[in-house]
Image (cartoon, rainbow, N blue to C red; front, side):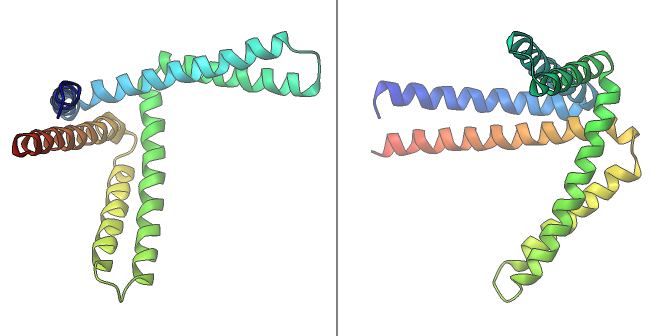
Length: 179
């Protein structure tokens, strides 16, 4: 592996370590992590609302212009509301997670029975049951679950990604040494 390749592997390794550290912080301080994520989403919504407002104000008059302005204003106001009240945004995001996990769980369970004769169908079934149970657990504690669910899930995702990158970098380093 050339110097560029070694450098890329080193960057991958350090990125993985950084993601692991962020994941640990997110799991240990889920409210802070969840609130930070919601604020980022709020700024994205704010920008996503401002852009069409500016675009529509420059456009010729039409019914589409009015609809674009209305949608832009609603999106920008939603962003401002989320930034101003991150815990409300966190509760709403948690509710979306409940819907996602329950829907995913039911879907996986149904699909697993279609693959029943195939090896591994039980793993898909188990994954579906786990998703469904996780969604129901979050729902049973909602809105309080908003204080931990988003931060913990983001943290676990960061930990998993970080470990995968560190493992990949280590594998690439050992392949380079062996070559």
